[in-house]
Length: 189
Ligand code: 5GP
Image (cartoon, rainbow, N blue to C red; front, side, top):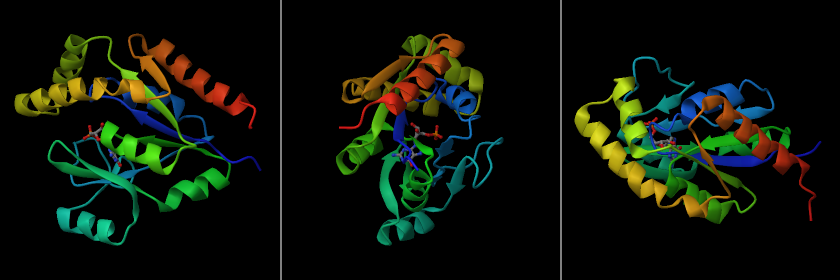
């Protein structure tokens, strides 16, 4: 069986990557890697589905046991990708999607040069701020932090293989699928 491809997707908060991925992941050829985090769950989030929600001590135990492929601190919380399910799913022929921020993505680039890196950018910072405010799940202070983080993250988009601008959702979903298809069709050296 042909091995799956590892895709690393980064996007500043509020870029609508959740909506794009929700659409793309309806296809069973993907495995979405559920990260661990110390952030508190949002009202609609479920443990084991969106994240494994851990406290700081639990997270640090997993760091010590070297169970993470990568982990990073982002806006005062830990986020990390667990190693175990990734290889397992790639071997089963599934494409594995890591949805992680830029520091983590750069760590994965060093460890897994076979991975493909996709950046999702907002059409503008104003749109980004509006989307965050509209979501209504964060305080103005957190929104400010996230907009600033987004500005820093956007500067790193050159490090990625592909960049999708999420202006019109349908188009962005189409772009994502096209990237995956192109990678599937690539002739292996
Ligand atoms: P949020 O709190 O909005 O769910 O996520 C904040 C940021 O953390 C997002 O950019 C998201 O992609 C990133 N993130 C989620 N899981 C991981 C992970 O396992 N590792 C890293 N490095 N970043 C992650």
